Amino acid sequence: MREQNLYDLLEKFDLKTDVAGVKIAPYGGGHINSTFLVESEPKYILQKINTHVFPNPVELMRNIELVTNHLAKKLEKNGEDVTRGTYRVVKAKDGKNFVETENGDFYRVITFIDAISHENIEEPSELYRAAKTYGKFQKMLADFDADELFEVIPMFHHTPNRMKNLEKAIAENKSGRLDAVKDDVEFALSYKDRISAVVDGIADGSIPLRVTHNDTKLNNFLFDKETDECVCVIDLDTVMPGSLLYDYGDALRVGASSAAEDETDLEKVNFCIEPFEQFTRGLLESFAHEITERERALLPYSQLLMTFEVGIRFLTDYLDGDVYFKTAYPEHNIDRARNQFKLVRDIDARMDELNALVDKIYNEVK
Ligand code: ADP
Ligand code: GN1
Ligand code: MG
Image (cartoon, rainbow, N blue to C red; front, side):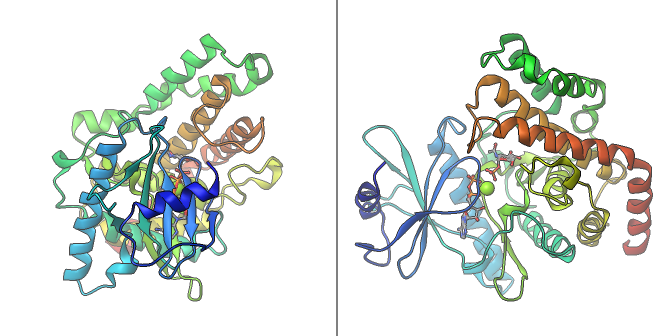
């Protein structure tokens, strides 16, 4: 879409200012939606919703409006700065929380929070601060009625189902790339009988379902530009009932890696224990009194699991011909998969050490 059309589109939203002539530029490093920063005063975020990934944008936006309204009420009650604690949905002039264009694209506008996201950590203590912010976020949603939420992507973190999707992609080999990735496929399949612990725990009740974020990678946290304080969690598209373990594991997947998710020099991609310790400490300080024994026992496993899960999702998308994640070049998805698998190997080799560290931290903070 040409930029001019974005101005026409913004006209349809109930903005506090005239945006004629202001700069509108692609923004952020997300893999799903198309995000633009509208540099008016105040600034806004304009997003084209990825309707391939989110085929029910109306329900998705209803979820986000409900969740952000709930968060705003809580923040206000706690005397906190609502404008930094969550983004808000800006309504269209017709009262809807999105604009649908003639060709069926869905756009939304949300308030811009003046803080930045990191693609990689700059120092381990960022993860302690992120865990505290996450803990607050999760607790604010603890009394949110989960029945109100539409399940935007069914079985989003059902790892055995993700494995089925990979097996289907292998069988179909739509992209014709299978031969080139035989080793990666073999590695992925070798984990097949080790990926059901969280779904099993949810099924037998030892792992409670909570209203969770489900996409807690590092760049979905915002940090203050000056103080590096962790301001809030954004990207609320996937807020759905889920396990705390999904959010914990996913945050550490990127947060405890020494390199970007698509670094191709795998010698540079290493699991780092300091951010792991920091995030675990922050999380357990928030949840020590309510985390179940099973959840606690599976903390290190969940990091392995979530890293593996995203790895097989990248591999699946590579085999399917790059239809899900945004890619910048043809081998992007396989580079990402190999990067995640390198981390899986690293984490797996250190499971005993990580389990002992979690026990130690738990005993210190409980
Ligand atoms: P995606 O679903 O594609 O990941 P996000 O909603 O995460 O899209 O947005 C992409 C990036 O844009 C984020 O990682 C963040 O850097 C930036 N961003 C998104 N929403 C806001 C906001 N309300 N305020 C400030 N920055 C934002
Ligand atoms: C996507 O939207 P973004 O870029 O924050 C994906 C996550 C993956 C992540 C991998 C809705 O997150 O599940 O973990 O890419 N989001 C969706 O980087 O599929
Ligand atoms: Mg994002």
